[in-house]
Picture (cartoon, rainbow, N blue to C red):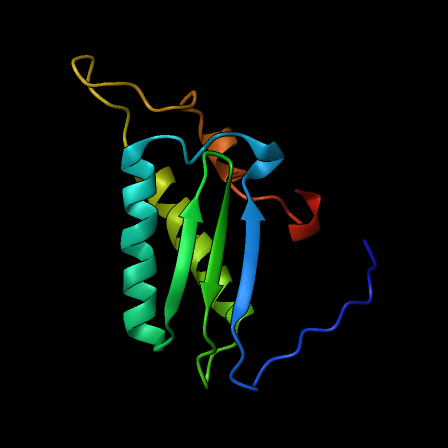
Length: 122
């Protein structure tokens, strides 16, 4: 993948964005996590005034088709989404024994790596 790609924003275009979890782990496999991701997308959409044309949440990656927000570029919107989702996932406590376990081993070190350091590492 070329390293000198240019981001072109500010023209009112749609942006198709794909990003995956760290080492393509299925961190988004549970319904609870997917629902949290959708809730965070709604919160960010309301705050930053962009439209979500479509999205697909797979166990190890996401696809988004969004419009531009005038003051906020799509890269910043994705950054905010990733931060909020990973922080809320880290903040969750272990489930009691009578509830279903998380879809991945609960390890704070693992959850520090919810997203890859570089987006092209998918």
